[in-house]
Length: 469
Image (tube, rainbow, N blue to C red; front, side, top):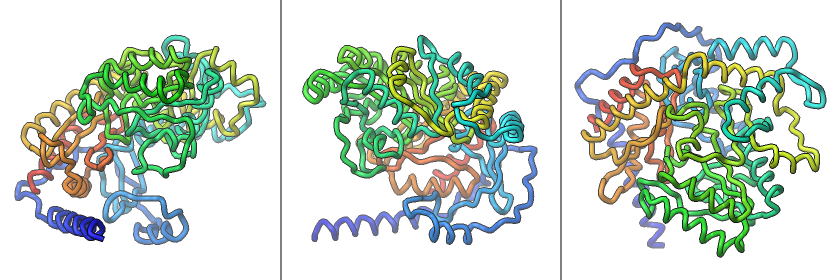
């Protein structure tokens, strides 16, 4: 009973603090203004947010959540900007996880999808169609080593499910190893790969082992990859009897708070896993396609080549599209039985996916991410020197995390303050994501057309919001 009263007391105090900080007036200094942008949104004639929210509560599953105390009704998007029902423009610094390279409604991608839709929307892979083979060829050309066989699916969840199936069939083993703090999808199988009940349901999953998270900022071994890798070896030696099916990891954790793994970690772990008969899976759902700036794929930042790579979200610039790429040897085990996905690689998604790859190359998006991301991170680290509440600024390119703490020494999560800043940034016209176990990390993953002016506005808005607390 005491624990319940204590918990209620803390919740009440947190709510009181949230309300106090949220409604504390902004600084008397003028708020920063969005950079100019030459686009006039169309007049919105649909239902407004309050009506949509009521219908959503009535007809959609209660597990759906939304951002902000008063959720936004977003009705139009153009490149790195979004517009609400009143025509107000927001800098989208988060939905880049799905509009990875091109930005909202990029004309090249829109045109490819529309033109293909006019000809043929769907046909199964029992017939031939050029779109799927052209897309697969272009995607395979982006992969290093012998990663040359492509399977198309509809989402990152499906991609990771298929990768896990491949690993088990190819190795002949069942045990899978995943990181704590990871996120790999929403199906029963991929939920099992996610160690934390904070995000997913505690459904028992046999033969899945979770190892210590190699987080350089919060991890128990700091940046010491050797000690983190030893934990993997211990799980194999004592948890899976020396054999394992596979190891899966995001090469930069997304939902976990834009966490870059300890340097050298994957190289050590890949060697351990392969010696135990397993295969190595890189989840590139959020970190792929040049977003890191320094490399096209996140796993390249660790100097490794996986056996299987999964990807989704930005692969189609918002289309329901995912893919698994592997070697011919591993792919061969799938030929023993029928492996089929009704909508995987359909002509419309294939045309859109191919257009995305072409835009990345044509507009030099990887180089752009390196340049703009370096500028953004530099400015954020300058802000970190100014405010104690910013405990860590991390990331590569346009995959950036800002972790807020109330005490830098103890790294105490600033949960309430983060929630307040989240609301204040929205009021200033900036939309960011939240992540981390305690919800105290801003996830900055804008469309890759994000500019230095946008980066400056984001940092200036954050500076303004913190100064008013």
